[in-house]
Length: 113
Image 1 (cartoon, helix red, strand yellow):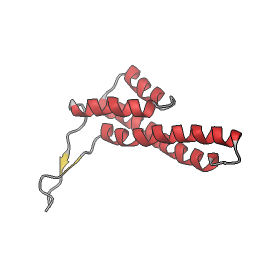
Image 2 (cartoon, rainbow, N blue to C red):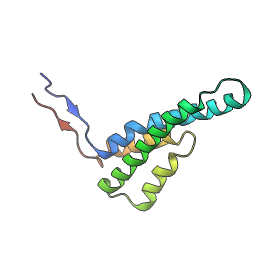
Image 3 (cartoon, rainbow, N blue to C red):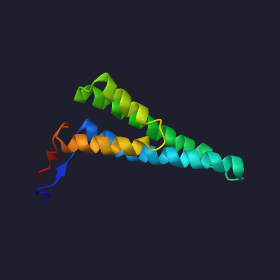
């Protein structure tokens, strides 16, 4: 029934999946911070919690990928520094996408029924 379907099950893929939402939530949080100070709109408490949870997942997945992929300290530091730069999550997603396509991640796991 699911012939030919594969599930990507690697540390790099998980980190890549969370990097884009992390970057987007950070930018939205920055916009909410500006709106809080310039208008009566205050979404910072909610957006702060959402971004905080996504950020923690990003850091956790980055540490797991560092261990499983055998990255150098510099590579892991770059991935972690990108998480605190506005737009850095988008750049991290592109870097990790290239790494995944080059085959540094664990190959896809085939699902058979």
